[in-house]
Amino acid sequence: MNNPELGKLITTDARRDAIHIAIAPVIAGHDLAPGQRVGFAIGSTEIVRVCDNPIGIVDPFLKEVVNKGERFYLFLLPNTIMSLRHEWVHPAFDSESIVASNKSESIAWINDWADQLQQNPKSLMEAAARWIEFEDYTYDNSESYKHVDYDKWPEFWRHYEIVTGTKPKSDTDTFFTCSC
Image (cartoon, rainbow, N blue to C red; front, side, top):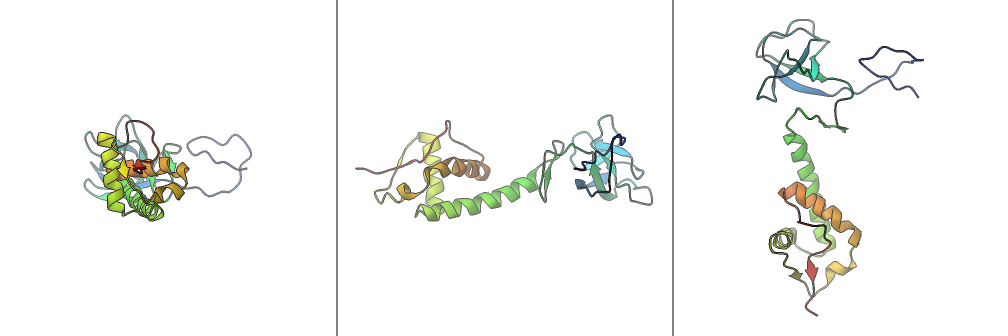
């Protein structure tokens, strides 16, 4: 299998290939040349400049200098991103857009889970919050929660944490109980 490693000389057999490169829109903190190595200005996750710890390069396909204040794509250095989908994670960037995307996905998952439990999503989230704060079970004599796959509760808590930013003090399954 051909595994190109950018940023290194080719020392083995190599063939043509295609690669993904993580890019991010940024602002030039001063005039920058195409291909120049840059990193974030102190205290910023949008303005880049030449620095001792570069995280990427100025778009190498540009034909002219990027002037201070102009926006351009930063090409992140190879093998530095931490995940790759249609959006990527890099430790130097604020992950707000990724969190927003994950939050939307988690809300949808929780809504589906609430349907499976025959619960209202808002009531489900309120019951989870009570469990976290007071470890109070929620009484549900319909026992509709008993027919669902208990292995999905850890996934619920993962989505709950993404949506709310909080998680239970310890691993737990359901917070529903009956009064029988």
